[in-house]
Image 1 (cartoon, rainbow, N blue to C red):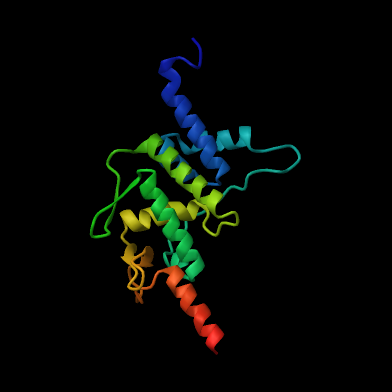
Image 2 (tube, helix red, strand yellow):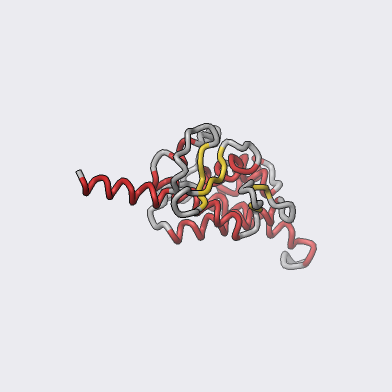
Length: 191
């Protein structure tokens, strides 16, 4: 039997996704949730493929994943990146946005397919923002905060109509990050 036979295709997909997630420095519990692999198997993959004798390795994230939503709205720049990431979630089909701006997880994908699409969305984000502020871990948190926990929401700008990410519990000035930045710059030049 060859590894390329159809009966191994599913496991090959899981393996490829696990390696991809380790490269993105995802925590073990996220990799296990997306691939179905045991935590022990993930640790062995890391030890086998990512530890090098010269000491250079992919950093392993330890502890609980970040869950603070305030990170995404701490300033207009990070808020703009978070909004872009949510657009990419929708573009890659892991998020559906209703007319009322209610973000819902896609019913069409789960498991390995969801993990692959999440990686593609994050990789597209990193190509758009060379010096990213949002790590893969935080993108996972953003997805969960906006779809299942409802800690974050989508709002539309009063000035231009752009849709942006907002903390569900924070006071909102109904300004998207670009409008907020331009208002801040115009105020600074008039002073």
